[in-house]
Amino acid sequence: MRPALLAAVLAITPSTLLAQTAEPTAPTLTVIGNGRVEAPADFAWLSFNLRGEGATSPDAVTALSANRGKLEASLAALAGKPALDVRSGTLSIREVRPKACVTNYAAPNLSTGECAVIGSVAVVGFQVKVTPAKRVGDVASLAAQLGAADVNVNNGGLAEDAALEDRAMREAITDAKRQAQVIAEASGGKLGSIVRIQDSQANAINSFAPPPPLPAPPVQNEWALSAVRLAAPLAMTPPPIVRTARVSVTYSLLP
Image (cartoon, rainbow, N blue to C red; front, side):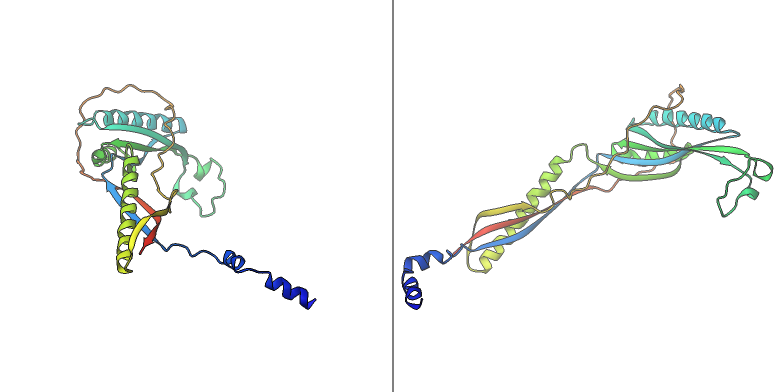
């Protein structure tokens, strides 16, 4: 057995040993580049609630429909004619009972005696896309002037944001190259070509999700359009739209 083992060991030639030795790899360096750019919003979103009250549920819905018609007609007649995309949301119709009927247990009540229904309130939420974005303050002020409640100015957006995303990516790659050049010079070498590049956040760019499409209104009313006097003009500039990019770049390092 021993002579055979010795013969096998002697059969291993120097060329075989060299073939089993890993070739040294060329030096590389990897950096993370970041880009951040912003641009003024092209449009802004406004949300509010509108209500109607009545002795019965149909009366409340009728009042709500009338208030909605007046509001939409007034918004359409706003000076400067900002482009408005009005979208309605969830409709809520609630019965109103006397205070003495209110309990802390949300138990069902009979509609008689002290718990008899004394009225009804219908509420619907709206979202309005305002273009240009700088007019959203005036639209919000007018909506409140005409009875809207819970008025909020939400995020804005861009009509086309691909160019802004491209700028962010270019900044990220430029930042990566700047870092790599500093590292290469500090280490006494030279920066070579790109070996590998990867977008570190391909799915991390967030955009404002618009509300669902506008459903058909329950009642159609005709309202005369006339110039609307804004009681309290409100100048507002929505925050700029920000896009970011993050890339991982590997460069070859030359002597």
